[in-house]
Amino acid sequence: WHLDAPRARGLAFVEGAVTALPLGVGGGPWAPVPTRGEAPGSAAATALGGDHLWVLDPDGALWALDLDTDIWSTPAASPGPRLHHASMAFAEGELFLWGGCPSPRCARYERRGWRLRDDTWSPVEADGEAPPAGPTRVLFDPVDRQWIIAGFSHLGLDLRAIDLDGVLWRD
Image (cartoon, rainbow, N blue to C red; front, side, top):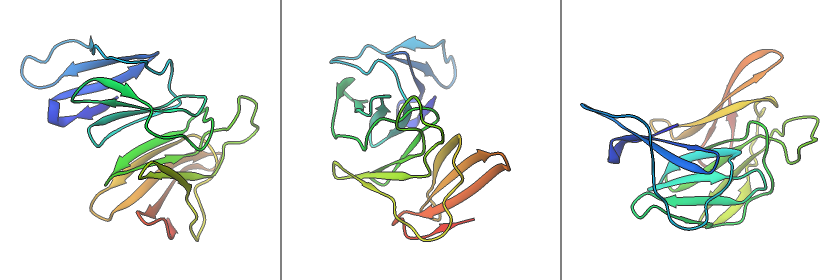
């Protein structure tokens, strides 16, 4: 789930539906968010940012729910299908996608990142050692302006960071 602080709620996307949990005094139970337009059926990865809930479906289509109008759109093509532990995060007008598998039968998770800027996806090309292949989570560190990837492999937890310009991987 994601924290939608400006609207004082938590948001979750599960099996084609958006639900919200009111935060604060009185709170309340999770409740469906009525949306308009065609919605994705499932998610390989989700992110919240730029007044949108972003959903990457397993076929690789990128969906955006405008949080002010609750209308779905498909703003940009994607770098391709993403299954099995792909992870996304949003910051400073950029969506960052990491890992996953391009097909249901892939033998290994990809050690690749993609960024979406101005409706165009581009691969992340950086010097240094990328995180190991495996299940990951991505978050943005606004103080140091870097993406942090927490990955798990046969060696255990591995944390790596890449600056917002995607120049260098760091431990």
